[in-house]
Length: 474
Image (cartoon, rainbow, N blue to C red; front, side, top):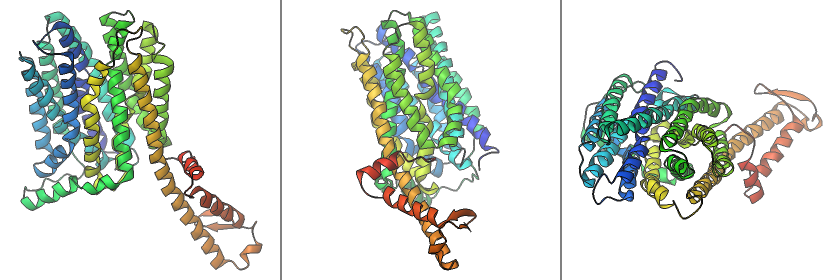
């Protein structure tokens, strides 16, 4: 793996992300229009926020169903079903006159289509890449920022030109259908071979994807709850920035430009972030990026009271706030063998969907216009989410470091045994250099390593803390 047609698949995945999560980034534009124009009689702002939550909920919770569909009915059949449902959802929502119709079209139908589009295109990448998984995923998720930039600006302009949301929804439907269809034709899993549908094979695939034993993997539990927290924080920021700009005296147009800048940051930075993650370690990079996000929120966003400062913050936060979307697949793939990845990622997606359902409702509920800064609660809460995410991810790092130290200790013990067997009177040759397994070592060096590993692998709070911050590429 790590090259060849895999890069074409990464680009195709980018365009599928563009037409799914990228188009969904424009929901904030529709949300603002729905709330401020009383578009549907009897509907509240929480109805519209819940529709946005349903999209993300279904896209995540149906991950195992989408993966099962690719195995039973076929990879391309699943993608083409997603293309059809996406077109149906966006186009039919433009004709909706009652809130329940919008729930079914822009909520349920579009949400299901996302699952059948982005899930297959995402699980393709680990089959093509090993060492460059984060790089490939960085290219793919850049489509979210690119789509958010284009669809948000285009939808906002069409709404102002036509006076309502109808043609804006149709535009999104037409563009996403075309892009998704072309990308679905070109993308393919590595060594793909469609099998005939049979009851025994369907049952076998069901047991693989719904393998409940993955819930007993501490690493998978950690990744699931970490991703849920960072995705909740991500959604709070995405759906708050534009309205926050208006509360500090900026115009609605300036608010939409700020969201466009944020999406530009996502599109430009995500591929680069993937390369960096592969270089310094995926867990290391993720922890660092979450720390930077926390600092930007508390040190920058809370104090950003001008257009220029908010533009700068939007680009910077856009570059790193979506690291959860970038790293959840590589981190999950790194923690389980390939045959258990579908079950592991299905579980992660199901857990995350619970956070997604209420994210936009929380974003609306936390606004307090009686305060000088109506978004101070949102800012503090989102910052704390990323702090919690860092602490949770340190648990994963400790697990991986412990495994690494055990392997190194085993290797060190083997070197000691080798020298004891092949060198007489070894105890009197402590400064003499030996070549063992292509490594130049001394007896003293080996003994020092043994002592260090003994202390690092102790089950004490001090050793646990040392393992969390042990310098290694993880």
